Length: 483
Image (cartoon, rainbow, N blue to C red; front, top):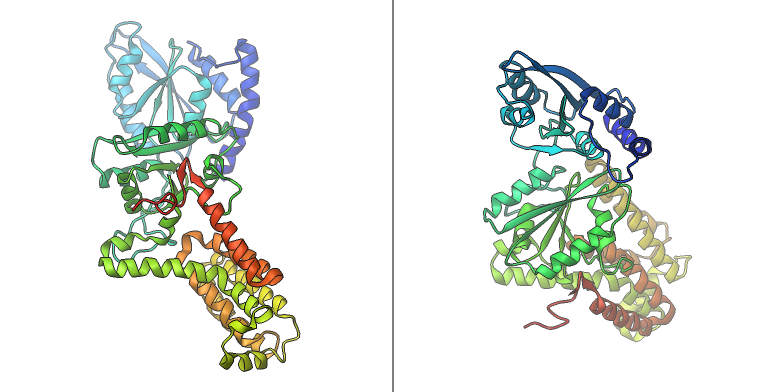
């Protein structure tokens, strides 16, 4: 409910900002006034007097017997109340402040026991900082305020990602808090060359986008290229890393993702050592990395913990699983409808017998099964884990067994489509690409047989070679070839 309130506030800020800009005759910024009560009225007008915005007036005693009016502005539920009470209010009100006239703001900043304190003279920027969980402190007589970083909202505990588990290795993953994710990387790479830069994207959301790289290893041209792409993003809101990915990739209309993603800090640290750039989006546990190569979809972090012979075997198995997953239904339809000489003589009779009771053409039969398996897979992913697992297993068994018993589908078709989908589980990073390629190759093979399949495969390979990941060849080290 509080998130909905904050979103409604953000939607009203632009309208209220224009009103204040007209009053101040400025199209570029809204400045604080030296009168604390006037600043309070501006903030209430800008925030539309929302009930979860708390304005707390208090008095700071001065050493000469006078006092200084102060205003504390915060969002209920987004700040650490104990830290504000103990480190700000008690520090400023229990003892008199010894300060020459005109330097109270400096002394107040020294008295507050909070590490991250920033001066801010722009009212609009201060409001965005306020709505992100910071606290705003204003003093009477000063046309700038102090932004105190003391967030107190709840964050998810660090746990292993559900989609990328490891049997041998670390069992922790990124969460929705950027500072926590950055700390996880710092803990693994405690070197001064590891640097982070934060920019804000989104006119209303002001989402923090953090770039992480190791200076001296990363290509400086790659950093500049990425910053230029990010500067060109002009949107109202950024919710997750997937939106950033679509804005900055070289080929947004290709089915192949040319920007990688991971939820594992150990994977991210290894990529940083290799000279990649990490993109951490606040509010999303999935971090992006650039450049990303096709070969990395065949790798796993556990490969580096196993013996080299077995790791090489597993990587080759993943590659052949990718080929089988996208091409097996297409090969099946081409062999049955166009090139029967490809089928061993011992298998012709069982296949013909299995299709005697099927009322549909082979093309329609295979296509229906591909779609039904996609429906079962998608339902298993979207439903809760306990229900999804049962549906994936029971649904597939019932679907296959009952369809064959009723004579709606032949048993060879069930076997071919099942093997195709089981092979796709080995290469989960590009499961969506595999599903699209499977359908595309199947259609080409249904229309033109083996010739159509070969032509589309050659066109697909040409397309993959032409792809780049922020200027880096997507098919490296094979095209161009690096021994």
